[in-house]
Length: 318
Image (tube, rainbow, N blue to C red; front, side, top):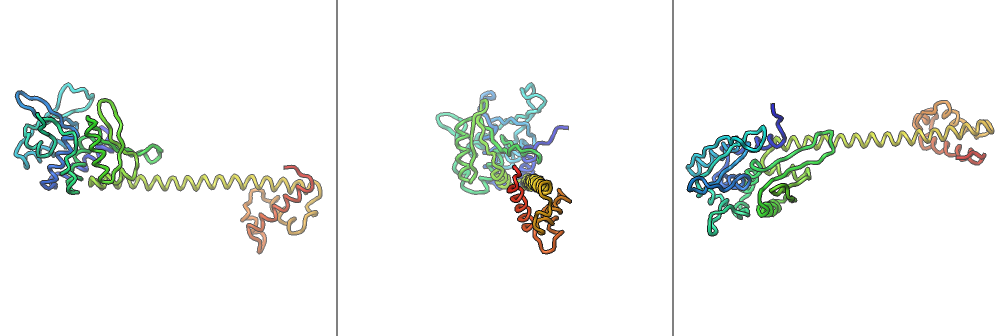
């Protein structure tokens, strides 16, 4: 069984949520996004048609439904054999209704029928249409990935488009919606991408993909908790190392005094602490303080420092 990737889950959620629930204006915007993503002009016989090629059969079923209910055209699709993509089934749909493409602002007639190079301003007029356009674009040419919980790799969401002018228009459009994407060339196309987990989360919310958003937020929370625990553990280990080093230094000072002068050389209050330290070299300052009524942890530390100073005056080298 093929692995269900993050991208597949997001696209399935988006397509499930839009099926039968798009208003008329949003249907047009959704189609616009899909055709910008995977549409191409081809000649079939005497006609110039728009064809859609994708591995996502569910997407073509949604397009098929919209085309039939909105424009009265039943668009068939079928697997494309002898395709270059190994171990994957690619489907192709042919759309003969050029009026629908002009209506969705995917085609322009500038001395001849051509694909539009920029996103039409009408897409941005209503928030619902803008969201529908981005949904159509993502299910057509988008990918996303979340790192495993135990990985330090980044978060990634991208749109892959074939024409630089479309990429420029998309970056500008997304910027007006508060999403700041970058772009770079890849092969024969352009990648419009973002690697910031916050932006990825905001875009999932914008595309009405709550389950995918929950998965991402859960991952971020778990990762944050793990990082906090790691920081606390590292801090504990560092403090433990300092405590051990301090204890070794204290014991050496006490043993030097004992060897050179005897512990009775020390004032009674310091001698008592010295004997307690020798009796338990691994005890913490707090554990030592519990052996003396009214003596705090800082008080123990102060007396141990005094002992080290006395050892130094007697000639002990560091």
